[in-house]
Image (cartoon, rainbow, N blue to C red; front, top):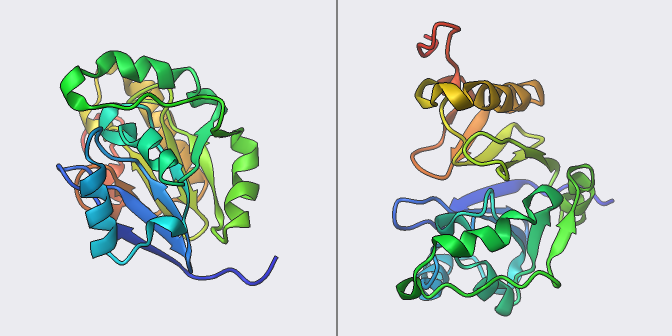
Length: 211
């Protein structure tokens, strides 16, 4: 492979949700895919941030809730392939049950997605010049994944801060954050709120945020 291009990140989010465009030159990955019925808003934000839609090589939903994957099919129709992890496949049809007619949600077709395993994710990303991997980070939902770049940037979707998780899910959430740290994550790009150090996601065993 040719020498890696420096990765840049811009936020094209709206309605209090961050949608991150990760770019290696003109090869781009869109992380989280908009609210249903808002394709015009997504197009406008992409233009405003200087991101041509036809340069987005894949769309990746960190999980299949309507504020994260609501535009997946419309983006596919606009030429953006949907990158799906094998563990997410069963969650796609379930998402429709949370929509209403006024949402203008377009069903995601299943036969034409790019479905991969976690082990294959590094190779797929490398093909578009992005060095990193996709890892399984359940906690907010069973199908939740995070994009972890080799430079330490991690795109976590709605992975819950350990201090705010319920007792039932605490062990799963803690394990997901531990995995990200062990694999080199340093800077968190969440779906809601500002970019922050992964140390802001740390808690002591007593449940209080680490100082």
